[in-house]
Image 1 (cartoon, rainbow, N blue to C red):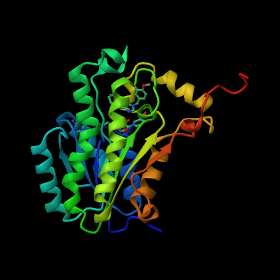
Image 2: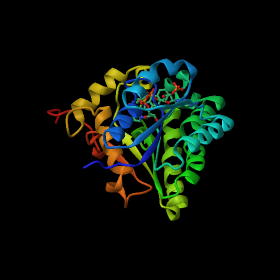
Image 3: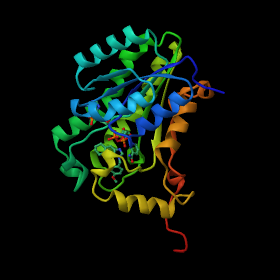
Image 4: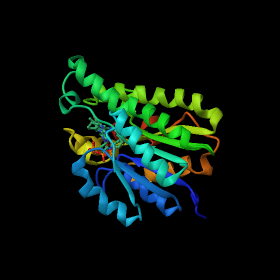
Length: 262
Ligand code: NAP
Ligand code: 1JT
């Protein structure tokens, strides 16, 4: 059974073949959705185009989510191309590299503003632009991380941005629920993507989780995408304002000790 036959989805946040958003785009496509893709910086066109072509996507447009004019133009083009849309995927985050290491107390004013604007406000801006195109209701999905709730070394200001993102999911869900628009987040375990690769210690963190998570392994883009599929399809029709974990169970642990250490 194809879960998204006849549905249209706009996907933000594909940088390359490792991106979580690329896993989601493929999964939505396999379930019958027509996809439009938006990328952030001009240099990415070369990387994103071949991926887009492989799933029959002809709508591939640049949009800096920190620029209201670009958002307006992007959704204008999307309205011309698709008319209505059913699904919005927001898989975007950014913080200056120097903020993702060292003491949190050293977070700069501009690093804080950048991280929160790009990683949290952008969900509100994109949802506001998409909502008028979701005339039959719709589903908005964003990506978060456990560092929103608990202190994770070096995640620093990204944790604060993700906390704002998760709260925004709840406020947007309450605001847009009466229009039949659902808004949810997936909290993914660490995955080696372009963003993650730029972070010192990511390999150590992957090993740490693998040794302790109830499933004794990490998760991959495809597992996140399968949860995205049910949240965005009719299978998720009663779910809104939620943070759903795809993390091999890591978040349920109160005292994560490696097996055999007691
Ligand atoms: P990724 O492939 O590097 O994706 C991040 C995306 O954000 C890139 O496509 C990037 O595009 C985009 N972006 C950043 N600033 C932008 C801007 N101003 N305008 C438009 N796009 C912008 O890494 P990823 O791991 O898949 O990350 C996707 C989401 O998953 C993020 O929200 C991340 O926090 C979340 N997440 C990741 C993990 C993990 O371990 N990988 C775990 C939990 C949650 P440009 O480079 O073009 O700007
Ligand atoms: C960004 C980066 C957002 C890395 C991200 C992210 N969301 C999840 N990750 C992976 C990650 C990163 C750190 C971490 C744990 C997981 C990097 C560029 C900015 C946006 O710390 C323990 C730092």
